[in-house]
Amino acid sequence: MSRILMISGYGALTLEKGGAFYNTLAEFSRYWTHIDIICPRSATPVRSPFPNVQIHPSPWSIVWQSWWIVQKGYALFQDGGYDAMIVHEYPPFYNGIGARWLHQKNRVPYIEEFFHIVGHPRAYGLKEWAYKILTFVCARYVTRY
Image 1 (cartoon, helix red, strand yellow):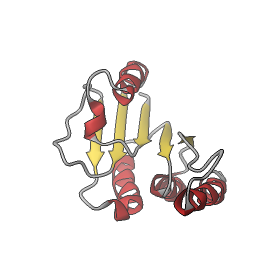
Image 2: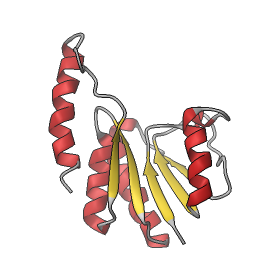
Image 3: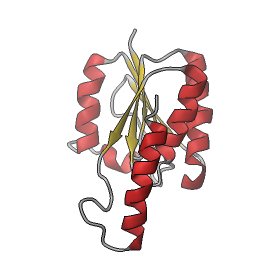
């Protein structure tokens, strides 16, 4: 049995048929027997797009997302182990921090996917400049192992 845990910033709104995340899950669901997705709170009801995909949105604000990843991830690991974790990463890096903490508990290998480095190649404003610096600092922390 092959199981994968995805930690994503995508909520239920991006699971419409034909969207990028939906198409990714369509392919993944063919090769993995079970996929669990931990994601932020959603304003709309969350339903699984495929029989072997389960979505676990946070009941809390995004501020507590790292803690939700650890809490829910640890509970899911108790139900059965995973072969790998996939982490969708972007500032402010709550997914990577939560995944790193979860990895320290269970030692399952994980893959960090950085979709975009904010402020690169050129930062437009102080916020983008800060996120660019933060990206390089956090990337070293969350990808250390």
